Image (cartoon, rainbow over all chains, first blue to last red; front, side, top):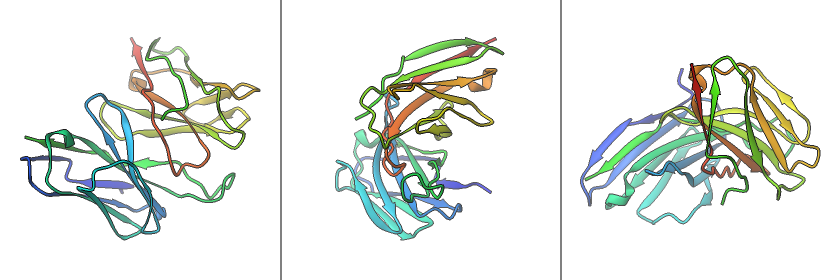
Amino acid sequence: DTAVSQTPKYLVTQMGNDKSIKCEQNLGHDTMYWYKQDSKKFLKIMFSYNNKELIINETVPNRFSPKSPDKAHLNLHINSLELGDSAVYFCASSQVGPQFSSYNSPLHFGNGTRLTVT
Amino acid sequence: DAKTTQPPSMDCAEGRAANLPCNHSTISGNEYVYWYRQIHSQGPQYIIHGLKNNETNEMASLIITEDRKSSTLILPHATLRDTAVYYCIVEYNNNDMRFGAGTRLTVKP
């Protein structure tokens, strides 16, 4: 029943490793996102995909590579993990349409993946 | 990045109305005002949004000033479970939500 689900919930790994976080939404939305929340609790957008196409790509190291096999999934792969990558990563989805359109929906977030790099 | 200003923290007594202010003096005519909240370390939860008119749903009311430069989120009867960080965001389209520091609301018994 979970609308936006992320796995794993916790991820502890060592520097230099490569890891992936998976996200799936069953809301039928056509846009998915990755947000990062650091230790200071600031929530920053990283990527946005609309119908499997990259829409937003903030200033994120290219060690982070999102992959969208279909519009219900947006996975985040991180290469060569660094200590500074430790954070909570949130996946979200929404339906984006023309402005003022009832077709639009608010963001629905997953419960986050807490990544700890040691 | 955030185009809004919110007080960093507020307290509210349980059962009373919680009024959370937000300033957005540079808001454009086609930008909506959105409110989300984050309880502990869960994912943010949508509360309400509006353009010009006041809005009400089962969770809260949103009052937007006539000049649209500020708004207030009202939780009519705050409960302990409403303790959270509340984010006010202005955005043309929900495709690019930018979260600021928010207001940490503590509801006290």
